[in-house]
Amino acid sequence: MRERILVMDGVHQKLVELLAKEDYFVQRLSKDKHVTPEELSELLFGFDALAVRSYDLRNSEKNPIVIPGNLLAIGRAGAGVDKIPHAALGQQGIVVFNTPGSNANSVKELVIGNLIAASRNLYDAVNWANSLGADVAKTVEKEKKKFKGSEIHGKTLGVIGLGHIGRMVAHDALNLGMQVVGYDPFLTGEARGKLAERVEDVGLLEPLLEKSDYITLHSAYVPDKNKHMVGDYQMSAMKRGVILLNFARGELVDNAALLKHMSNGKVARYVTDFPSDELVGVPNVIRVPHLGASTDEAEENCAIMIAKQFDAYFKRGEIKNSVNYPRAQLDSQAGHRLALLTKDGPGLVNKITGAFSERGINISDQVYHSRDGAGYFLCASESPISPEILAEVGKIGGVIRSRTMRG
Image (tube, rainbow, N blue to C red; front, side, top):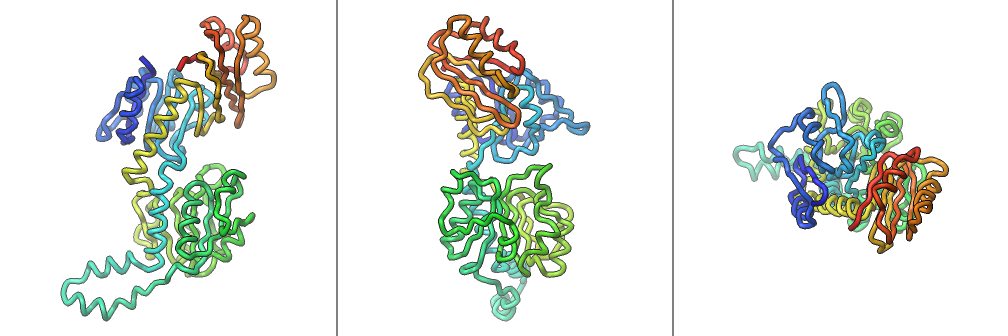
């Protein structure tokens, strides 16, 4: 019997189906059942992995959840991991996976739809039309001019964050006849190569703010780095009458500054997928009820990605799309593998390979990568890796967790 996996919190049924086919033991909790932090803490002692969608795994006085060290992996059905204490879990040797790009098309379509709807004043117009009681046709023809909007064709869209979603929004906007300016200080060379040539990739945020008629946010939210990345200073630099869209995270925008600049006309409309109390009843704020990834296709894509990540990790020790450990893959066909989750440090690999050499075991292939202080060593061998050598390398300073596998 392979690893035991707990699936909860509305994760798509496709995950259960795929893992069951691979002979994993899978238990699904009903999405209608409320699981308290205390109940989940106790339940997790019987599982090797957990798949969640939006359950808050952060330990606090109000949310007293303790994730046991027996857990090997957590899969988050979505890209954001702000509700998962991934750094602390990494120190326990628990790999946290997310699913970047799996819901990108779903979010992109919602952004483009709201971009057009906001520009054409569609929401106010429809609400007004739905409020009419009698003589509707005559009233509509007489009053419709109150809701005159603007075309997006020929206008400039600023895209902040050029990951999966940002690039897709940029490309579709180009196809709709818009000019597109992009900004992403963390854009890799590989990602930049996927960006359409007609996207003006600027190295500073200010030029984007100054020339954009519409601005859409697609940056990942990192609490200690970019909270309120769009605040008073940034809004002051924007074009007057700009339409701002936020389908990334609510915390990226300073709501106090937003209200100030909406009242003075700098920001004409704000469309957000993250409604908050401060924005209730504010004119020209369009509050979308967090629908970015709420399509059957996006939820199924997330489930498929988690299933592949779990299967690769448990069978071959390979890591892809982890937020707290580096990526690792081996092409070796050797039948035995050893994986070590470590703290990054000098001489660690030599100590590991030395232990194999002393026991006369040949390593046919190996890889070691580190990231943010976390290290991951994966090797393959034609010879069986005995419990003795597993215990020996597990005692090496800096090694957090060791395990063997045979696919």
